[in-house]
Amino acid sequence: MLTATDVREMTDAQITERLGELREETFRLRFRSAMMQLEDPQLPRKLRHEVARMKTILRERELKAAKGEGVKK
Image 1: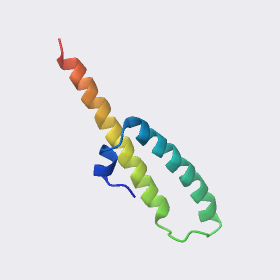
Image 2 (image 1 turned 90 degrees about the vertical axis):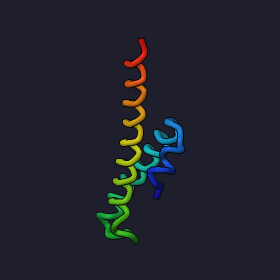
Image 3 (image 1 turned 30 degrees about the vertical axis):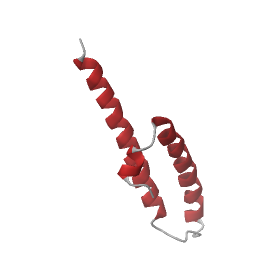
Image 4 (image 1 turned 60 degrees about the horizontal axis):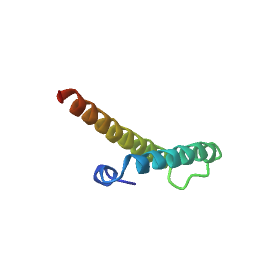
């Protein structure tokens, strides 16, 4: 699992790529969970938190960029 500091060091492209990987993994986990084949029952929750962390940081960057554009005259 990545920390917020690790995610902030990544580029937007890297974060977007990782988000795609996490979505695929979450999809596969749903099936394994339904068949009771999860080694770590907390893994789906951890993945959701990681996705949320990445989306939050991407949004922070968007807002920072928009604010920077609005200030310039």
